[in-house]
Figure: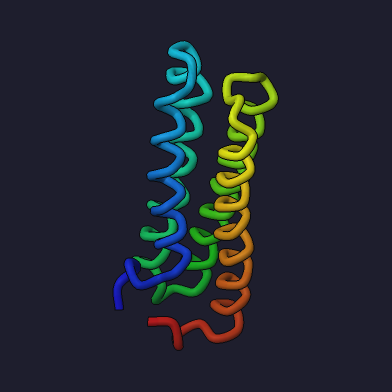
Length: 124
């Protein structure tokens, strides 16, 4: 099995693509400020899942990186809220859709971390 088969990685990948597209619609100054930050944090979720998966033999390392991925997901939500609350993003439907897409991997990461804690090496 590959990390690409993990539902949490697939969800994170979808979010990266959507966040990237959204940031291209931001005002120019914001594309290089919060836009850059939200792109980085969303990409960090995906890549940290991959790094953790690569260390899955070592339960504590695996969990540590999944926790980092969860923290990056929370950071991405915070950047999204900042962009919306400051008026740089005005499309409330898009904001709500992206927020929902970010909430889902957060919940799934929590469940996955608990699963790894319980059944460590059955996840291969």
